[in-house]
Length: 234
Picture 1 (cartoon, rainbow, N blue to C red):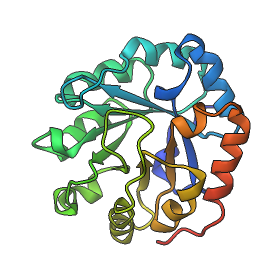
Picture 2 (cartoon, rainbow, N blue to C red):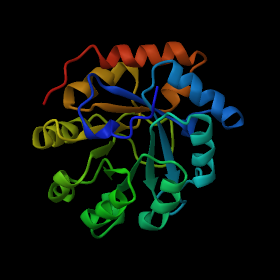
Picture 3 (cartoon, rainbow, N blue to C red):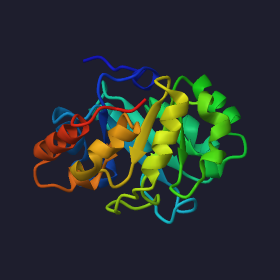
Picture 4 (spheres, rainbow, N blue to C red):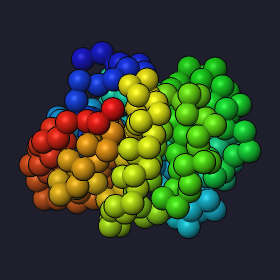
């Protein structure tokens, strides 16, 4: 199937599973990525951490480029958890990113940076941490293809889902309607997938709940079944 570069620019028929390679087996990253895609993931989520904006380091453009070589027809969704996203965006676009999200907490002018990223040919997302109020993102709701709601504190996989972030998701969906994607990132499991979709999320990131299971195919099925067990609230 050919790469769909506009994946985030139109409403999906159903909520999509984004496989976060942060929890994949780095000794077999290509194989793990293909397993997740073959099991039903619609895209790969690439978490970038600089050790400053969040207290952890993850991967750089070379890893993103390697994943692109192995998965040439896959949508790559890069999430920049970094202090200076503008410095990173061109390198990740060159490495094969199709969408780049950065944090509202990290930049002074999100609209200007969104225009810069979009000029490089990618979709653009605005991320916010669990404790960040909706007032911080409200001025920019119409400037982004995607709004990423962190449902854990950024930086580490395997954290528990923060239920209060569902209210933020619902608040965003009520205001953007179908014109933007809403991505829920952190602690997404079959036990809460239905609630995420009901609140308005249509892209759900899974890391340890997918790659941390002994059977990735079954884990993906369980997640997707939970997504489809609820109707989205627009």
